[in-house]
Image (cartoon, rainbow, N blue to C red; front, side):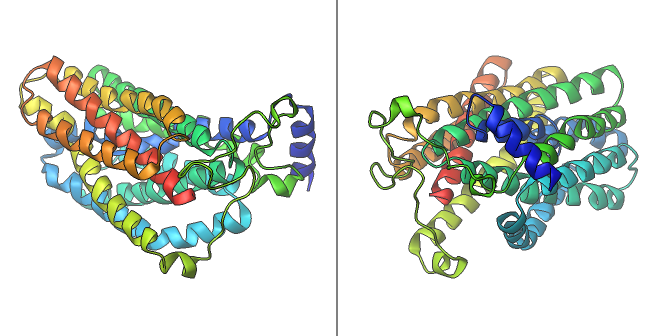
Length: 364
C-alpha cells in the first residue's frame, strides 16, 4: 500500500505525464537484461565459444529455437499475469533471473549446461521481458501509442547497439566467460530495481487519465492512435477477449506474418557475425555489423514515430518486410566492411520496423 501512495505522490509532483516515468523504468531494462539474451548479443559469442569448446554453430540456433518454442507455451500465462497484476514485479524477477543465467553461462563447458542456462534465458527474453514492456507501454499510451512504442524501439536498439559492443570488447581483452559474467552483473545493476519501484499496471489504478491531452492542446491535436486514421479517440479503444480475437481474420494474419518475419530476422542476426568472419572480416569488424544492425533500429523507431500515425500499418509492414528481404540478399554478397555495414544496417532498419509495427498492430 505504501508503494501505491508513493507512486501517486510522485505522479502528482511530476510536471509531465507519469507514463514517461513508467517508460524510463523500461529503458533501464532495455539497456541491460532485455538485450543480454538477444540474438544480436549471442552472435558475438558464437565464434569464440565454438573455437574454445568445439561446438557447432547449429547448436546455438537450436538453443534459440527451443527457447522461443518454450516462450510460446508460457506467454499466455505471462499475458494473464500482466493483465491482472502489471509488469513491475515480473520485469524485476525476470531481470534477476537473466542475470543469474548469464553468470552461469560463464561457467558452461558442455552443450547440456549451455542449453539448461540459455534456453530459460531466451524464454525470459521472448516472453516476460518483451510482453511486460510492450503491454505496459500500450496500457499507458493510447493517443501517443505510436510515439511510446517508437521510443521503446529506440531504447531497445540502443541496448542492442551497446551490449554486443561491450561483450566484444571484453572478449577481445579477456575472454568470453568474463563477458558473460559482466553482462550478468549489468542485469542486476540496471534491470531489477526500477521496474518494481515505478511501474503500475494501468493509469486508472492510480486515478490517472490514460495519456491525457494537455489543456493548451485541447481541440488542436489529432486524436488518432495508430493503425487507421480516425479510428479511435483519445483514451478510448476497442477491447477484445481472447476468444473474440481468435475468431478474427486479422489475428491469424498477424500471427502468420509475425512468425515468418521473426524467423528471418532471428536466423539472420544470429549468424551475421560468424558469416562476415567467414567472408574475411576480423572479429571486431564483424561485431560492428551487429551494432550497425542494432543502431539502425533506433533510426527506424524515430522514423516510424512520425509515420506510424499517418500511414496505415499494413502498408508500412509490407514495406519493412520488403526492405529486410532485399538486404538479406545483399548480405550474402558482402565481402568487405562497407557493404557489410550497409547490409546489416538495412536489415536492422527493416527488423526494427517490423518489431515496432507488429507491436502497434497487435495493440490496436
